[in-house]
Image (cartoon, one colour):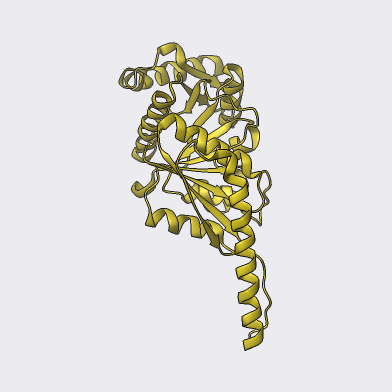
Length: 292
């Protein structure tokens, strides 16, 4: 891992994002770059005097943010190499993507939001769906970096795209676990059918579990994951993952995002988005990036 990008926006608990970014950077012997959001609505007046006044206001806001940062970062100086820049703009997520396209990062770290609606898509949702860089969402207050890591897989994946995502998830999760010296576990949820219709559900679930374990065998061997670290259960994916993560008190969940963007994505929500709102643990979201 070469570089971590930490996002500090104006509405979040800044300490958690920076502390987690630094904690990961120390474990992985890398550096941190901090992108700080600054924006205020300025006057709509477009004459010369109004424009000059807006320029002065913007300069003052930027200087206030710089002064804030210099005081904020002092307790962390000397732990890792930290650089920063302040970005002015209303649409911060788009600026984050442009920044990541212009630079090379292995991980993007930010504090998680906890609000959403059908009309408004929070910054987290946009990042989870569109980021080419794995996104580390900081959730947990009492973080223990020495606890296990859980990667959620789709062991019934039928499409080539989902199979590639499984492989990418395992590669990133395995590398993360090795660098942080934590144990890696895998989790798979058997979805409940919408219609039962006289089917022997216990027998069917056992058959699916057997097939899933067979599918996972190659993954387990390749990434040297003990077979007892594979957990399979019946239920809604986000709930199964959350239950298992809580049971072993994992420090991090690694999950994939297919980047659903349509109305169904907003109403139903991707599994990673559903899990984000259910979990009290940190979440690392991985997409297919350039392959999509």
